[in-house]
Image 1 (spheres, one colour):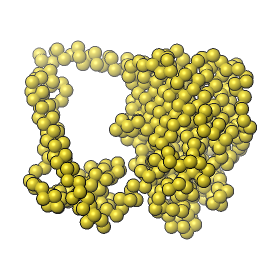
Image 2 (tube, helix red, strand yellow):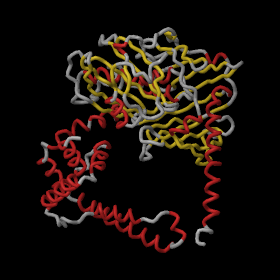
Image 3 (cartoon, chains in turn blue, cyan):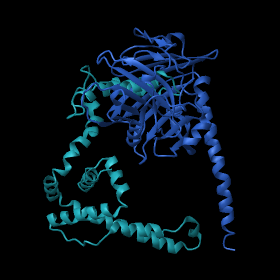
Length: 320
Length: 196
């Protein structure tokens, strides 16, 4: 029997792989809870093609309430104060492009569900910001999203480093802590330094009831679901823009639909670091529209989504 | 996929000017014999311009495909390690041969450029396709204030896109950041769009 010597090899492979995956899965679960369980403060850098910035973060968990302050350390001082994942106020130019923000909560971080779209494996151990970390790789199972490499703090499970990689393994963006301590920040550190403009949250923003503005997509990359849809009038161009946000639990993309009103516009593709933007011309019963897809997804996927946008509500996606 | 667009892409690939999508398009279409014929005709034309030696029937691609098809499955490795090493050597030498061939082609860049100029009508779309590359670098050079992408972004496509895309990019980043997430990463993304 020539197969016999192979059996131990096959069997060990059979057992080793799930064990490995399970461990990675446990780490993902810890990641999902880390922000709700641990106070910390530190600094991190963000880098993408053509941009490098440094930020400070103060994060406090007290009586089940999470309060967080983020501040950019270079260039203009941009600050964000968040309570329980909701943005309270911002300084600087952040949120300048937004009208009302609909209070649709983000999808809960679901480690189990991510497994359907990413193959999650533990790659080994390393060090980030002077702390031991576990390296978890999330490789996409299809070509419609990018892969992540996450470096999770051994003590807390916090992501201390996150790399976004395209299908060739090229680095698209880097998010990495340079220092982190787990002492809770005090009240002073959580108070904004500049004038902090409150963010208006339109709780009642009815999810687009008007069918004239309802849109759906004939094709979406598997796993992506619509998490919000808004209509707002651009103050500068005076046109009504429908915007839809989609999410697969880790990756997000937006679709913007705007009537052309007779303008002749060429299609365009743009790649900005990790973010792709594609505009496509659509002919609809209401006239010519421009569909723009923006997100951290491959250009080809964004293009396909832009071409799949259709007017009218899709029964499968209609929200109650 | 229109024939012309494919030929433009082919030509771009030959001039080493294709972007990622074009390269994929060509690779997808490459099983089609028609495409392969066009490709080899381009090669002949190029070789003539270069006054190069050419073996018209030399089809490295199918040779490589054949070699790949013969590649053993991992389980067989146990049986004959020497055989697989031999095959590896074959694959490696094919790779070396291909690389050497590519190098020889590239030595004559000037003539290649002339060819490209004569094909100007075909490769007219190249500047359009190059648009993304221009944008991808813009934020380093631009300073601030004048509206996010005013400085030479999307050159050759003024108007609508210039006005809309920066706003859309920003809106997407901020929506994602404000929706709250498992890490401050979306916030950092949004902030990086404002650093100009």
